[in-house]
Length: 300
Image (tube, rainbow, N blue to C red; front, top):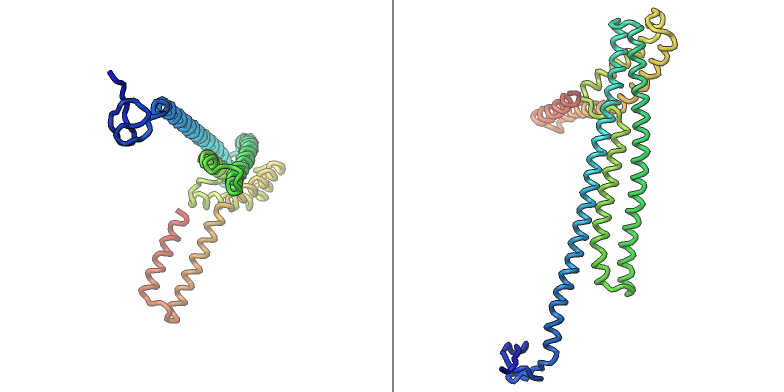
């Protein structure tokens, strides 16, 4: 039987000769192209597989970074919660002493225990902060390198040194790397911010109560020493610690207090605007209602 082939020009089955007997199209090289086609397909599959593997690796790396971020976040929260609790317990102990609810012996024992633990946790916080600062510096350095590499690729393509197809192949990987590093840097900055704020997470009303205890304690130190309810040396330690705790509390309370002052000033301005006829009585009452609602929520 005569060997045949399919003409790619007209699509008919024709004898395997140099040219198609129907349309005259050349049939030479048809076998070679047919043999090469599977190789091209295999090449495309291999290239796609490499791309998919690269994508999986990138996703795995991002996933691992997110798991690491979650673990670090949990460590920070636990550390700061323990540190905050010991600050609060020590402050409340001072309040109990001022009210005469604890003997000097028991007070000193508990005060030393809380103070020692606070020092330990402060040291742990500093080590944690130092490690995170190092990681943040490293992420920022790598981020700048990735951005420079991406810019360099585009410049090389613009001057004709590098084909655009190569730039397009390398750009997605660099963009993924930049995005990942930006996320990690942002996460590290957030963790460092949490480590700086000891009193974070305390409700506004409790913050106000703790601040009052600290002020009352400071005002009572000299009297407690005079009444021999507190040794002079211990009293000076308590005074120093109360000032430090008050400073930490004021850092959080201060923002709310400033907002309270702004809102009260706004109330006064509204009254004046109403008196000169700038706003109506209904507008005055509506705005006052909104401001008072915010004031009530400010210290809940």
